[in-house]
Length: 59
Image (cartoon, rainbow, N blue to C red; front, side, top):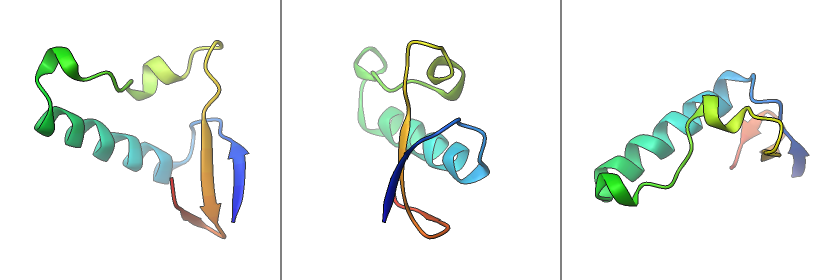
């Protein structure tokens, strides 16, 4: 397993973020969804980390 700073360019990361946002919107009232979408995560002030097992994205 490896943890790395991610540049948010890989399709697996995009899919995970889409799934996470969709899940948050299903479970929470709109004013209580605090998850950021891909465009908001790509700002210089945010460091995004991912966890991998070989080529498999774990989180």
